[in-house]
Length: 345
Image 1 (cartoon, rainbow, N blue to C red):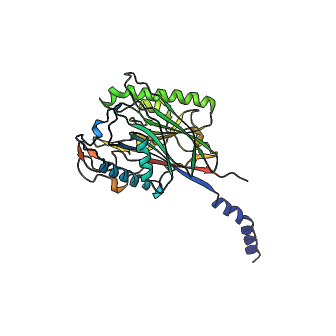
Image 2: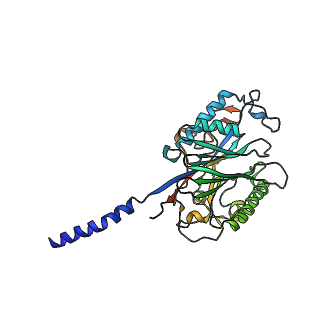
Image 3: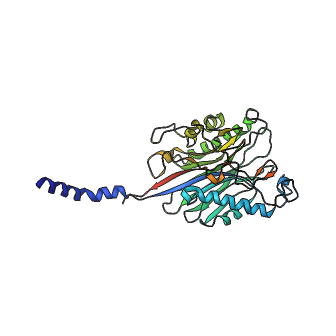
């Protein structure tokens, strides 16, 4: 009896601490990346080569098809983060700010704000960032020009600085859409290496000023985590949560998925992990803002998957060649969870 009473007293003493550990408050955030595949308006821009997506083109791109595209994209984006939508979403292949706004209007469950700047891409497709204004406020927005060896115009890298409202944590998002593999992967790799070098120089200068900054790189890199542009030139390493890593080297959340032959884009029946999220060491240092270990995922909703044919298991696009399919995108989105530790009083 005496022993039972002692055990009960011990439980009463330590119970508050146990409950505190179990209910420790921390806010979870979900960041995502999605190449939305040719979100064009139906109006001719004389300054870009957008003739492919006009009402009089072979694809007969009309307002009706744009509305289908917007609704389909909204369905995918709302599906992310267990049906809650991402807190921050990087997108590629959007024609202009107006189309970003229309996408935000289609996403009615969150209060998304678009961040965008026009780039010099010949087709007129840009990158952008959507963030929920209930969660974040914008602090700064600028672009980084990528100059290719051929001088052919390409997409800028978009640098968006957001402040988390609840914690005041500052996070720097860099949105990328590196040059394509047109002409073959080997022949075109110098262009992606130029983009990698441009971004790495920017990061090196940035980390001199803010060595412990929260940095998140998102985008369609058109190269995989093991390729030289990403692994060696950008210095984006594989890593294990909590382990030491090289100072100032970035940590590639997509690396292990790529090793497992998973991917976000199906090409010639092979999966390519070209959509990636890469973070600075500050998001794996055990302090305030942290990556939730092993939470990086390629999101493949059943409604978005091609069921048969040469592209079976891939993502259902808007067009296959010139044939209108009315799908979503030729890329699957990727996402990862992060959390902000509550301050101890």
